[in-house]
Amino acid sequence: MQTENRFFDDLARVATGALGAFTGMRAEVEARLRDQMERLLSRMDLVTREEFAAVQAMAAKARGEQERLEQRLLAIEARLQALEAAAGERAVAEAAAAEKPAAEKPKRRGGERPAAADESETG
Image (cartoon, rainbow, N blue to C red):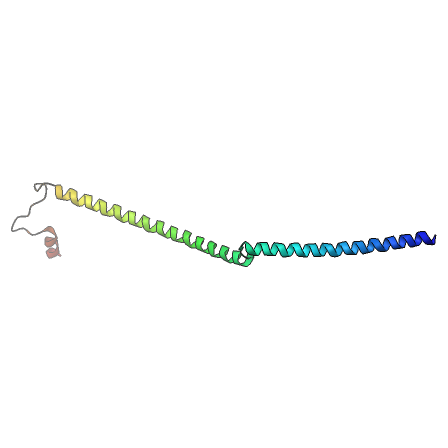
């Protein structure tokens, strides 16, 4: 019985040692893989999370500013179109007035005063 007990004790010690060795090997393999990955990533010229967040915030701010300026530009263009339309209507009216024949325009006689002058004197 002693022999079997000793055999199992030795077997348990070997298994425990092997398990400890495997655990140590696992930690070493993980460390080497981590080092390899860090070297690979450093060669890839990637940005950090903080740099990415900063650029993302700048892009969002620029997009907001662009939208604000776009709305402002649309309002200015609308005002410009309204002014151009009014100027066009005025030009058409002036052209139509200039095209009226002289007979249609009221003539003033030499001794008559304009109507506005008559009203100002009576007041």
